[in-house]
Length: 210
Image (cartoon, rainbow, N blue to C red; front, side):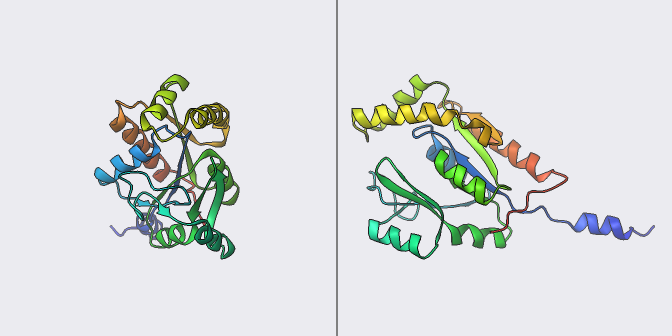
């Protein structure tokens, strides 16, 4: 029995590549989640964010961030090379546009980490992206995580916690929310896997055009 033309066409369809935007308050564990996903071999193109903040101990340029001077960052802004950028806690952060566009054109699923302000900007530009909010179990626990980093002064710590309280109010902006328990990292990855699987099964796929 010959396969009908419609069935052959249906079978040959490929799912469109996803752009996943992972966001949440400072200190909630976004970097830890992405590092674990890479270690487990999750097949994403992981976008590296550009920043003017100082490089912390153990961080690698071009891997954790692109560490730039303010002049270099401004040049990227002037050339339209950033999908979005913002000044956060006195430093500039931005998402390289070309890196996302190139990966999507090759059919790769892309994941990018941004703060909540950045996620809101991307939502306006690329509403077909998948937006995931990583929230802390409580503000008390988030404060403890920030203290453990020992990279902020007491004043900066208080500022980040106050901002986190405001950012949690932005949940309606997102498609999904995952609670970030420090001792359940693989559960977080499993939930992201489930989101990706569900999105790949959509009757009307999200088409991201950049």
